[in-house]
Length: 197
Image (cartoon, rainbow, N blue to C red):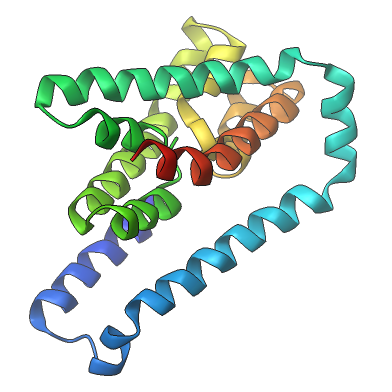
């Protein structure tokens, strides 16, 4: 998946640089981005609403299950604020980058529309890098730091891309925790990114 993502990005950059984007597409690019964004959010909504058993199981686990994604959200934003201050970035910009939580397709598009194409591209690359590093780090973190710590690096991707890794290296009983973790962080992205930027 990471190879396909990077390949799509490179092909897009080369096509844009070469002027291969048809005029009709270029004129309606904002509309097409909005349609793709709505379709993506609709799919997430279907996934959340269609899994009633998950919602009941999460409710049975109580308030403790929400602490992990909230701590990860705070840590992600604090980390990007720290790095952003070292790089001389405005606090809102760096905090918004951290609030992507690994959801590169949404955070990149939101920041490109709300702020600038440059910040959107940086959000895309930051969050793709988070996903790639998570794939590498989850087995190591699971071995040396524990079950719950292994869920944290994946951010929003723990409900899809990195979920199989968590199940493999931490155990199938952590699947629900990981899925809920990703669900909460995914729900926070469209709220926090515009708010912080």
